[in-house]
Image 1 (cartoon, rainbow, N blue to C red):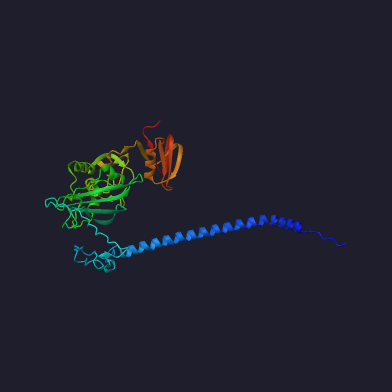
Image 2 (cartoon, helix red, strand yellow):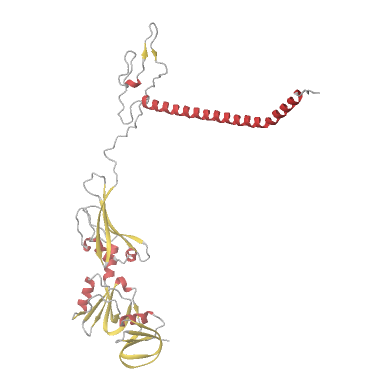
Length: 407
């Protein structure tokens, strides 16, 4: 027997179950569509903003080109007075206002165009009238430079000339100076000459004696350098042409005077070419006074020999000698108590043996309080300094010295 079953309810239940299982997939698709829609909307919004900004930029550019008046590099035309019956003739055609005439009505400007009012000219301040008795001047200085060699060194001399104005026919004041490293390692500016006017006597030296000494100069050498300064008026001056001032001139004279010491010898520091033979003591002194390099001398009366020196520090006793020193170094002299002997060796305790010359050996022992005597071996150029002295004996070729006051 054939039995038929009604499966409609079963089919509906299966269809419902299939739709329920598809719900998560549909929700995911809906969320994806929503994100895509939002992205498209944001992109359209950004594009619109960019277009708007570009449009504003184009508008500003057009306004700058067509509505700003004449170009910056063109001269601004004169502003004419506008009248109701006559348009502005000096306004460029591109910026003139287009007008439409309507019968029976007033003249109407083209829509969207406005006319900019002419800006008022900026008033420039009026300079005050110049006082002919007190004209304005600007400092104006010209320099003349020269490089010279003096006393074995190179000196850069700079001469400044001050003018009242750029159009002044000549300078009113001038000066000359140089720069040099001092013995402290610091660069010092040394003022050499002042000229208060083109016709007045130049004043030199200007810097103090202490400043000059810091760079190895004194008044005399500073005057020598000052005589080599270069001037715009081609003026030339000898060292004797400068005005030193009364007090400084007296000090310079005193510094150049020789103080004579009979029976003493200034050791070392001989100038090149010394000694000068067959001269008198007076001639030796005159030569030293005339030579700016000479600060001291020793005259050997026995051999009529003159030893001019560029410095002196130690004087030792010598019956046949006469020492003299200029006032500039007189205060630096020290008198040694060394008594000398020839072909004699001093016996005692030696604490130093050095290779040197005789004068250097004498100076070294004189300056060292520990040294009570010395032996100088002439053939071997050796100096032995002793801190104890017991006796002496004959020894050919040795020059010796013993301090008269010893412990």
